[in-house]
Image 1 (cartoon, rainbow, N blue to C red):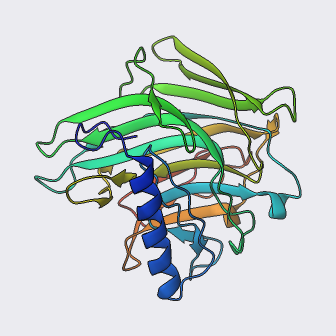
Image 2 (cartoon, rainbow, N blue to C red; image 1 turned 45 degrees about the horizontal axis):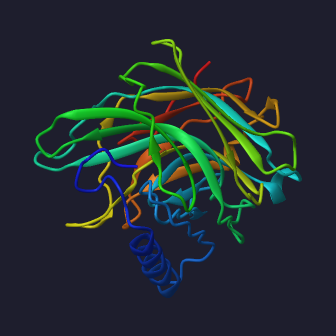
Length: 284
């Protein structure tokens, strides 16, 4: 879900094609454990694959935490989390840059080695973009793949806002999902109930670089973002009990780390995200 007018809505057919081509290139280069998910929000290919560093996977468009059903021995019927909307500044002069911060169920890896991915995804979050002229823009959105993303027009998101979101299937097994996203700073709340068939296989708290459709198509460039903190992370109504092994590092195609999640806090329900950094201190 991009706020730049030329790339705001991706055509699903193009998304699927781009995902297929990118996945083929990944496999051809010998990289295994790839989970491909097409999304009009811009996250056309979720590359969550094993990395060379211990206790961290690497991705070309995600950084944050991913829990899988095989590792956790359970399915995911709800997820929740708070975060602070980061401020976005241009990293490279004259270049449009985009980022999204969100929680979701699906789309990730079901195990730490990423031998199996999840092709469903229901998610909600915020967008932090910078135009080529350097002007930042912010918004909130929700999405269920493969349907188009939906901007929450009545939410006036700003950097520093305290967001709280939850995605819950209720009753359990009903395939009826309740999405809530709140801007606690501005006292704004959005609620949506939608039917959706999920595999319940993964849960995520993520910051990403979405895909650009059109001229210069490809993964968006990462803007300079202020430190983002996820807190109150929950799955299935209980503390997420995050593990360092569930971290995902954001890397360039050459392998350079440009986005780093911290270790979990002592309560294992919070972590920080640092863009354009190779280290990130954990919140208390």
